[in-house]
Picture 1 (cartoon, rainbow, N blue to C red):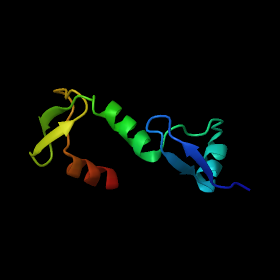
Picture 2: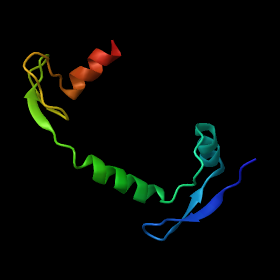
Picture 3: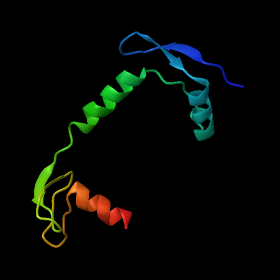
Length: 91
């Protein structure tokens, strides 16, 4: 039903392919507009926004290692490092 389309990135001006699979994904989600940026420019834009996030340093309540978290730790709530958090979430 869908066929690959060649689009031009509005940031870098390079051509990129809007694949049939991507078009189907967009249609399933109800997106009406085609992407305006190529994948590298979309990723760079996301990273630029994420890069502005402030991180706080704390100590993991489980293993005692340093933990960097994107929220200000509170005294009444334990903070876990990424490894301990993954273990907790997996259980």
